[in-house]
Length: 174
Image (cartoon, rainbow, N blue to C red; front, side):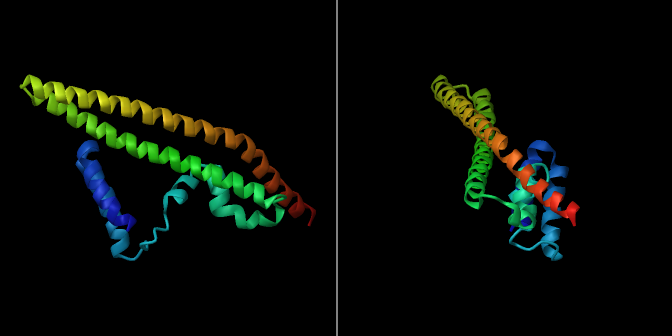
């Protein structure tokens, strides 16, 4: 499924960012499914991709089972994990909406340039102003979720470090 969506997204994104790059990325996803290199469940889902650059997500997605015995308070860590994932999801959702609004904004600007009729220009101008307001609002929401995520990092990072350190010390003793 991810490959098919990648092909569609690649083709659409390719129009803006260069047809060759978008189609090549989409074709790669389709080829991975066609040759059985990726299942429809999507082994490279959103969190897997983010885990490559986000150490907290990497801990929860890849390493948690290794350190589970060293967690002092499972309920607290689970609560923090859910909050962190909610912040990541919310910021990503806002980014998706921002991308849609930018596309709408570009489309409206093009329509405004092509319109001669004063009444139509006024209507498009109003839609353009609304799109700008929506864009600013979404950017503010995304910024707030990123701040919340950073605040959670102040709590999660030392906690994860302590968990990993406990395991390392135990391994050094053996």
